Length: 600
Image (tube, rainbow, N blue to C red; front, side, top):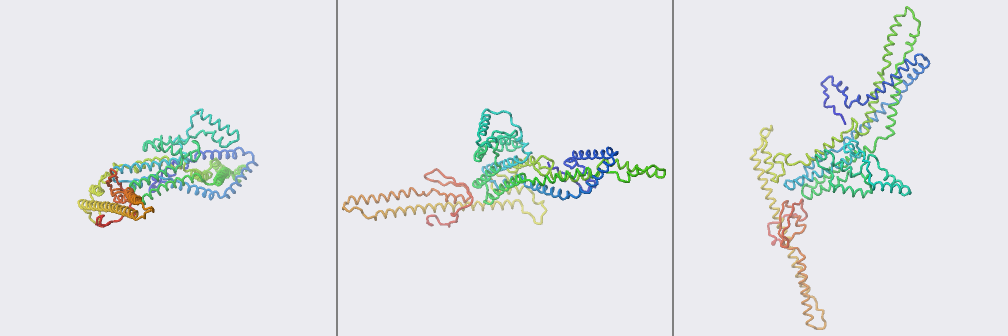
């Protein structure tokens, strides 16, 4: 988990750097103290060997000093600082990009509650349920993706728990059959894969059940996956020809459900405009893209070769530091200790020996080596920790906390109920003007410092009342025009049907007589039969044509353009309700003040 410390730094405090430097949680000391103990121990062992074990072996001591001098010269020839800096910079940029790519549901919850809404009480409840369902699908998609790449999420939901050592006879027989099939040479590879079950692996149904059993999930949603949705995943597993152990529920499938639900919301009138629908779909697509980006960062890592080169370079450098930073005896000290005693030089020899004793005490502790160890190994370990930002290290991202935040925001913000809004902003079915007037009346705008004075609450209420009357008047005109248009359509259809029947009757009466034998009876019967056929055709046309009170789909669309509900009576049916509809078609045009009969 990333440690937050910047808020506790005060630059006015002159000793703030000491508080920052000696902070333990998430610090370099917490990360390196074990390695540093090993480094100091190895250094002390080499120092004891050099100063004690090799003290009586001059040639070996000289060889040891030669090795120390040689390593001191060549160890700086490798551009370790450049190599390590490039490695850490690359890893840190990937870590930061992963941090920014992890999607949060606070923005989606905010826009969902703003765009999927209705002022009608019944529709408001439907809109709230739809918002919660969209966010439930988004949380499920987030969990399905993160559970495949994050150890934190796997441990939280118990995906790594060992299976019980209970196998049914059917499983055993299935394993025996698979082994026999593999022995015959038919699909031996697939048979071996199916017969061997990993120790820490659950079926996809068991993983979905564990998601529903999570404490936070049950607190906010009750459950994230329903039984019907589990069966949908089962059909997806069948299409992909996967088994219960090899199938992993697709993270994008719940997002596809969410986009279709958004389209249904638009059809129900819960989304006002088409561009708002496209905006919500684009937000779902961005959410899917961010999850895919996080997956790509974990799937496609820094090349292993480069990481291995960095590891080898750092640890070889530190090994050479153990020898190259050893404090060897200078040549002049050995000459002083080997020189014969003399009274003239007693005081000088004594001071030199005291100096050598002090240097020997320092020779057993790596001062310069400690600095190099902390700088280089600390720098390198930071890069190694940042390689997997979704792990369980101190510098890794708190995905479990992010999930808790997403679950809370989805219910609190996305599924916000009317009790979370002040009077005047609730969806209680009252006119918008009345609600806005109630909200503005509750605040005293005279206390606001502004250059212009605000109008009084009574004037605002009067203006809103006039606006409500104009809106209702305009709605009434739209209803009248729509009904007038429907009447015009029906009258036109009646006249065209009557005209077609008359034309058919005239054509049958003017048809030539087919009898050549002069039988008047046949002629009469023929003419009567012709007129009867014409009458039957006219009756069929009248029966097939819609009545005056019946409605077509275009008429229903025209009625829905008014934005209100209406009921048109039909003699052949009880009634047909016309619900609200967004937008109009080609028939949405204004008609004059004439009646329908006059227009025809």
